[in-house]
Structures are given as C-alpha cells and as structure tokens.
Image (cartoon, rainbow, N blue to C red):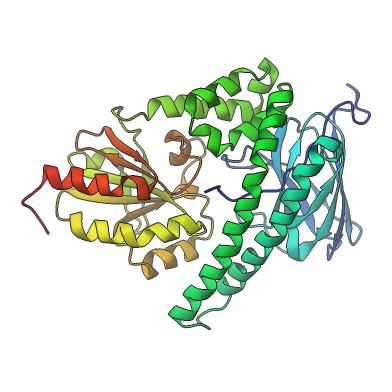
Length: 397
C-alpha cells in the first residue's frame, strides 16, 4: 500500500516570469481561520526524507499570507504554526507542495483541514494535469472522511469500548483504502508524464514513489536512466538513485544493513547484537490498513516460534505520534521488540537503508546476519515458519 498520499503542486519556469536577479518562488495563501501572529513554515525534503525548515513568514493579515523561497526543484511541506505554538515538523498541520523552477503559487483552504489545501499555479494548471488532478481530488474527498474519523477516535479518550472502537477504526481505514484505490488510477497517467517529461524534477518525484514500477526493478532503473542529468541530480533524483543502490545492497543473500536505535522500552537495540538468531524485521505503521490487518498473523507466528531462536523487530515508519504507536503495540499484544524509525538521526534512518517504499514489508535475517527472505508478510510468513522450524524442529512449541 502507499505510504501516506500527499498533495502535489507544481511550478515551472516559463509559465511565468523568472529572472536570474529574482530566483524566488512565491506562495500566496487565502486561508479561512488563519490569524495574524500565526506562522507559515516551508520545510523541504523528499517524500521519504525528514523535512528541513528553510523559510517562514509570520501572518500579518487575517486569512492571508505571502511566503517567498529560493528553494526549487524539490518537494516541500507547508506547515502551520499557530500563535503560541512551537514548530514541530512531525506534528504541525502540513500540506505537500512541489517547487519546480520559479513561479507564483496560490493556496486556498481552511486551517481546520490544512492537509487538503487547494493549490493552483505553475504546471498544476496545464491541461495534461487536469485529469490527474480531478481523480486525485475525488480521492482526497474520500480520504478526508477516513482521516476525520481517525482523528476523532484518537481524541475519544476511552469513549468507546474495544469492539466499537475496532468497528470505527475499520470504517476509517476502509475510507482510506478506497481513496488509495482511486489514487492508483492516477498511476498510468503519471508514468506517461514521466516518460514525456525527462527534464522535469517532478518526474523524479513521481518515480520516487511509483511503487508498482519498483516491483520491476530493471524497468524502474531504466526509467531513472532516461531522466536528464539535471533531474537525476535533484533531491528526488538523488533519492531514487539511493533507493536503487539500496535495492542492490539488500538482495536475498546479502548481509543485512546494521542499525542501532533505542527501542520502545528505552533499551538500545542493535541488529548485529541479535546475530545467531533468526530475526524478522517488520516495517509497519499504525496508520496503515494492511499493516494492521497483518498483526494477527504476526502474533500467531511469534507465539509459535519465539522459543525457536527467533525474534521479531517491529520498525515503525512515518510514525510521529509516539503515544498512539505505543498504545497500538500494547492493545494488539505485539510482544516483540519495537523501534520507531522517526527517532532515527538524520541520515541514519532504517527504512531507506532497506529500500522500503511501502509497508508492510518484512525481511527475514538468518543467524549469520544475511537476508534470507523479503516481501509482504502475507507472501512470506509461511516460508518464515518453515525456515525456522526446519532449523529448530525439536525446540519450543
């Protein structure tokens, strides 16, 4: 499944005036509920990288802001920091935007639905984008219903019993899955855009999260090579190049990349310290419907194999609400070790080292520290069981 779909807006030199003496993108906002004293922060980075704040502006007129930035050819996030709040790039309301070349963008919306800001200007307005945008808008409307329900459940504070809570959570996740199915219909149109526009940095960003093409690694690598040198050198282009290198490094039979991170109990967990055991790395997220659906199978597997020199390490990705992550781990009785990749230092994230672009994804590491299996849990868990039980047929259950 896709990781957290986002709003993309494009700008392009040539669509409006841009000169060497004024290398800026201008973002004009008309936002209901925005108040003087609020702050708008632009944070740049690719979809799978930690965003770095680069520019900001304090609102001086209710309902309006104007922000300029020299950032270009990159994905970015517009963060809302209301007066009296502090900046937290992981938790402040955020809307995605793509800056290509230099242009003027316009955003409209409501502070209560910040993630669904409506953006216009630049390449976003070209006819070839309209069909994609119409589909994406219909998906966002459905996605919004799911997120609104999930947000209300997180604020319910024990209002519902466990069975009712599960029903409502399943309903919310159903909305999000339905939205993802519509987002998937945009894929072929986006691939055509990449094919026809090798000199757009946005083409690298589209390729960056093209999960279906990633399944055919040779085709994915070939698509990257058709991009211009300038685009390959853009932030998204570099991310794609790093992903391709990581895929090669994490082929079955290769040594698993080591990592060290404090676990959910505050103990340092280093993968290499688990050498001598079979270790299943489970990349997941509490926000991910497929991940949540796979938990019962993982619980059953762990109960069967935990006494057979076997361990699971849950690696939460894009998980910025620590209390909710911890609650899900406890509620679902996920009794193995857990780390939150959002706590990793910049440049030491586990997810990109394993070329994980969609969750849930699992890797079985053998006792010598080599990758024995990798794939979606529903594709490999039976093989995991067979592999471990063959190695330890007489121990445990």
